[in-house]
Length: 86
Image (cartoon, rainbow, N blue to C red; front, side):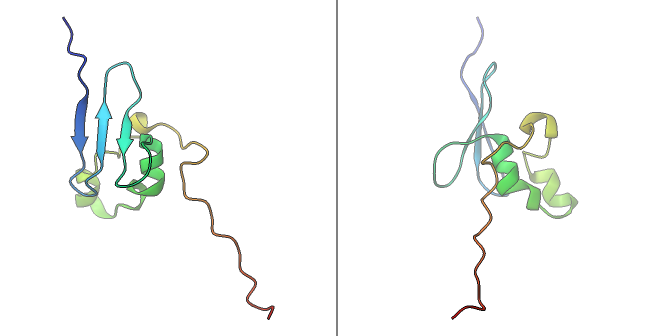
């Protein structure tokens, strides 16, 4: 018999939880908002980890686990503001 219960991983840096279950994509529970993917976590948080000490602690540094960045993963750019018009 196989164990089908998910494995919960918690990052010691950002405290996010990643639920990993064999045969399914990993699911990330952010501190607010809906669940997301490892690529979304990378785009919004993990890519900004600095230094080798923090990179060793981050549980989302493996590109093969997170996959390619998908549309909607990164925060959208802020709209430009025309400061010259008044």
